[in-house]
Length: 175
Image 1 (cartoon, one colour):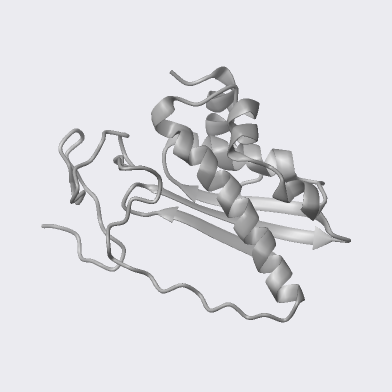
Image 2: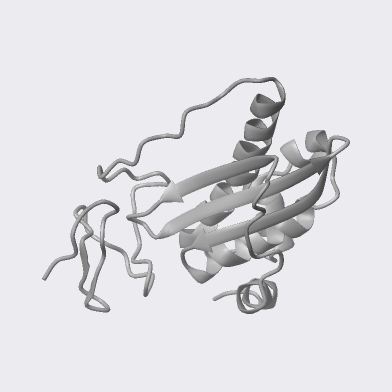
């Protein structure tokens, strides 16, 4: 059961979008499990002046992305680095047990965006990670369908619950 706050942030997400000239970008998630988050930052005088997100995932992932942008906006980078998954889950008035990993992704995406900004500022150029078609459980031992949230098997290319084909990035869809 989702809280009213989760449902509000899912139905009316705040700060959705892309910042084309972002000072920092953080991307986290697992496309096989259905949760992919990108956070974009605009920094002014070491404070988060603007923050946007794009998320592909379940309602909890969208709500977490929305909430973390609300929490982080206007904060100093040092304060934003201290935002935890527990802070996000608490601000949403809780998440179901099988969705707590989403709050980790939100905090991780924010920290990755701040790290990207700091690296750029120091002149460090990080190569973009290459896409992998290997199934990795990035948040626990369970993966869930991005369409219906049913738990998937070890080789999640088809959801028995909603009869959806789940395309692995870089692969061809099943006929």
